[in-house]
Image 1 (cartoon, rainbow, N blue to C red):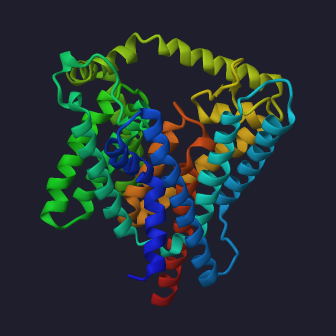
Image 2 (image 1 turned 180 degrees about the vertical axis):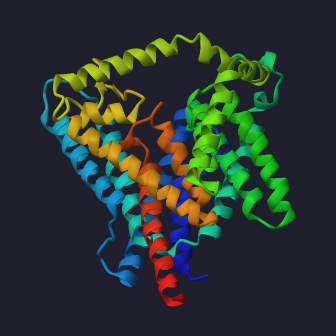
Image 3 (image 1 turned 90 degrees about the vertical axis):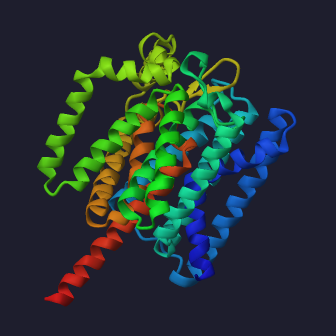
Length: 415
């Protein structure tokens, strides 16, 4: 394989699963104190990914030139990021009516500029050179290693349900929420392997492992967001794989209705595997905490509904927290104008995802991962802390344009 093509593929894979893979592999080996182990693994990993993105950008510019292709989704993404950067600069560097710790400020700029925008830029330049089949298999391999190490390092994952008294994480750097989402990604990859692969081992044995362990992890992480993500990817897959859009929508509504009707029975089944998750769904005080965050973010939006009030909820100790809803974050930070752009960007990206998944099954896995993270953003994390969303919006949207143009050209040649 051409080295440039391999680097472009590896760059995309690292955006999707690299950090989870690296921390699961290296933190247990390093040992020592948790904070030190996390720092020793994370810093070299970030430097490596930045160097990889730089190499990809340089080789792509030399091949295709410096101009970047745009479509509706990426144009909306560019507009929203521009508005968000103005907000971040004003809040972090100009305002004096609240205080943020230097470490918190550094974290925001690190994620926004290097991890989100720079990695997204590398994907914008290199998307044409990504070997999608290789990317799929490398992602599956990294997931398999990560899940295996998680089982080894977290023996309680396989314990009886009555022994489970707390939420499960992956390691010192892989939180319960991220761990649960990793399980959903494993389910996506396993399911797509069954559909697209022909090799017996790859088609059945590995997918069975990914789906079973992914389900176990997503439940025992105790996070509620992964359940919503699972429902959204089932609905999206149903809509894209049925011949008529109307039939797909009807089947999706039927599935959603069955989930609502048999909600209590589903909870009873989940309780046998992950009682902590059921408790959090029904009785957890965190439900009230989330409601308070949403209320505070909404009030901040109302303070300046046109342009927004602040990028996050600022605490008196100099730390910040997001509202756990990216749309509300967009409204709070950039007002109704930015919120509208953000919503339009998500809708446009979902339309692009539908188009390319409908026409080319090989894109289904990466489209579903994008849908997963878009859904997850409605219950957790912040847009500027989630590099995978920016990168996958760019990849899926530009690949969709490329694919549609190829089909149009083919149709012209045939006629």
